[in-house]
Amino acid sequence: MAYYQMLDDLTVEVESTDGWQIALFVDAADGAGGWVFAEPLDLGVSDGPVAAIEQLAVDGAMPPVPPAGALDARLISWSGAMNGAGTYREFFSNAQAQVQEWELAVMTPVPGDYSLFWSRLPTEGSFILTSDCGLTLDMRTVGMYDPNGDTCGTLYVTYYPEAIVHSLHGGWNLLSFPIAGEPGEDAIADIFPSAPLSVFSFVNGLYETTAITTAMEPGRGYWVNLPIGGVWNVIGEQVSDKNVSVNAGWQIIGAFDAVVDVAELQLQNPAVQSMFGYDSGGYYFAEQMEPGRGYWANLGAAVTIDFLALEGDSTSVATKPVVARSTAPAMLVASTDDGKEQQLQLGADFVHHLPPRPPAGTFDIRIHHDSGNASWGVHRKSLSTTHRVTLQAVNEISWAVPDSLAGVWQLELGGDIIAIDGQGRLQIQPHQQEALLHQVSQASLPVANVLEGNFPNPFNPQTNISYGIAAVDRVQLSIYDVLGRRVRKLVDEHQEPGHYRMVWDATDEQGRAVASGVYFYRLQIGSFSKAARMTLIR
Image (cartoon, rainbow, N blue to C red; front, side, top):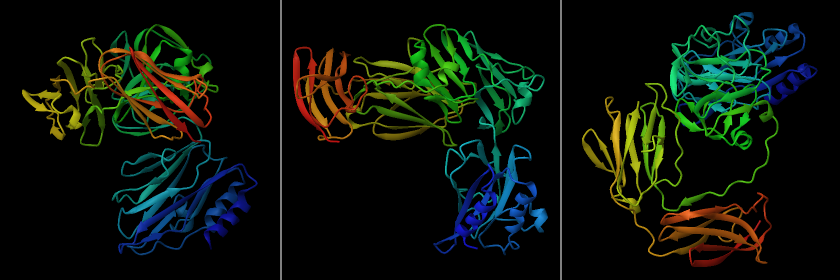
């Protein structure tokens, strides 16, 4: 039967229900330089009569499995009812258990050399792809799976109707409990795929052990150390009080049962200076707070965050212009043997303070400053400086440095001093947990103030405006229309000597897009002033 005809038949049989269906597609290398395609598979959930739904699988029963070396894909959850042959159509009833699982057997001409694709997923629920070999993949985050030689022939597609489902990894996870658990069933030891080895909270600037026999407090974040990874299906009732009171400094918090936009949270709570999440690759800047995940918040003052007020539509806010040095910084990259990476910028324009170090054994690298803060970057100074660098589970450090910064940076490790020039890499031994980063000279600086122009010109929708500063001074850069009216002030601050680049996105002070036409940009550095013309074409 042709695939699209089969879909037509299937639609006729289940269209009167409120269920859903998705299609799975398998293609594989044929061993001769080409590709072959298996019959598409369909799975789903229906509100129709159970007997009629089961009949769909029986009607789609497949012949026996072909000999080894052929391409074959089939759904085998109900294979016992079909003499073990399996089917290409398998539906469950909503009257059955809420969590549904489909078992998929795949055989290919070249073992482990195939791709699995799927059609658009329903808007509700979560879909997790797993295998007996340890695979755990959130199907909403990607559109395909490539086993890369993994010869596990059986895969499982699990559907969770609940909206909050996470794939957790073995080791440390930064988590929160976004809902109210069932009394007597909400102990930390009982709510995760495997009982945690240990759990930490963060109280008064210190990690504190939390007993796994207790419940997690909604709105608070915890470090949870799991012996193995797995799927966390968060079950419970909505929390009525979604106010979280936190003190100044670093605190671990969590959202409740809705995704929260961090920019909106900071707009309503200016005391929240920055937000970091954590995954298997280490810390990252968080743009959203997902229910169930924990986040480090850096607070300038004590505040009570009303998460209920943040669950509606976010307020539109004009993007603040960002100035960056046009000379690329030197870049150090710390990495692990299993592919984790973290970049350090040497000569960075913007340096964000990092949350406290994660528990021992997890990947982390950071540069420490005299202020007591740590970051992933360091400013370029006019004088020689030294910073302490701490390494945690780092296996290698590599670097890429532009010629303009040759001779500026050195790394001291284990008594050896390594020049950070050009490109290079350095193996880190397990006992090496600290290094020193030296800035030993200044990079070349402009000898005079200069407006270097914009590129591209004409432009749409944004252009880069470059300029150079010879000495510390107040810098003003503004955009004007042909009538001399100021459209946008991009820069108004004191800046250190160096080359800078400003991006204008063709919006005004309120963040509204401006019309096509001729515009002027004017740079003033002390008594120095110069203007130039540019054209926006939409």
